[in-house]
Image 1 (spheres, rainbow, N blue to C red):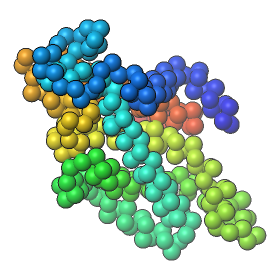
Image 2 (image 1 turned 90 degrees about the vertical axis):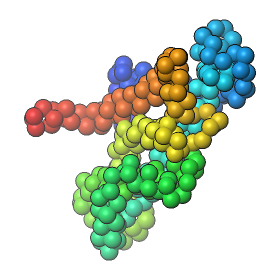
Image 3 (image 1 turned 45 degrees about the vertical axis):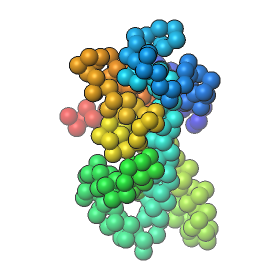
Amino acid sequence: MRKDFLIKIVNNKLALASLIFITLLIITGLFAPLVSPNDPYLINLDDKLLSYSLKYPLGTDHLGRCVASRLIYGIRTTLFYSLFAMIITVFFGLILGLLASFFKLLRVVILRFCDIMLSFPSELMMLAIIGFLGTGIENIIIAAIISKVAWYTRMIYSFTLNHVNTNYIHFSKVIGIPSRTIIKKHLFPLILSDIIMLATLNVGSIILSISALSFLGLGVQAPTCEWGIMLNEAKELMSINPYMMLPPGLMILFVVLSFNILGDSIRDILDPTYNLKIKDNS
């Protein structure tokens, strides 16, 4: 199964290109001090708003800082924190979703809690939480987890419903296998591929949320290297140097697009009839 999955990913050119791009981006972020051409925090007003060159591959900003270096270090803030928030959210959603599907006494409480949380728009909830907790990357992560964990719980609960009432699960209960073992050995492996697909599809939305909040001045604060902050700083110079908007804007675009393409490809591989269902419904 895993071998077939990897073969299908490799044969899908868009998915493979997206996976390679994301992998290279993660490696670049991990080795940012070695890859960056300059110190991203070094201010040199004599070199402000320079065009691209060998020393400054993407030019400099209004404070003379290397745009390419800040873009590379921004991977650590924008992408890595988004992945971290996604992992934590999926972890809590997985626990709550499995508990809701397997234990009837907890199902009503967990699902009603999710219904209450889902009645509020996630972006509005994030703004409210940040307004209460204050700005900063830690508070953004907390807000992202709280605002999205109910949706993940509902989705994972729906995944487990396809398996929890099957004969082998009932048989495992009858012969006295502990519930913890059934969840760990049977249910979790069955929905693992669905969880990977779900997480991949939603990394892009978390990246957009972090960047948007930083752009509005509610997230990561300067002088931290973050793509949303770079956009915020560049918008003040649109009349004299609109080029500064392109590097962070295109980076957000390509990263989100890559995750969405990869997530769509994984969904199509796991469910080859998905596109047929869409056509039938239309």
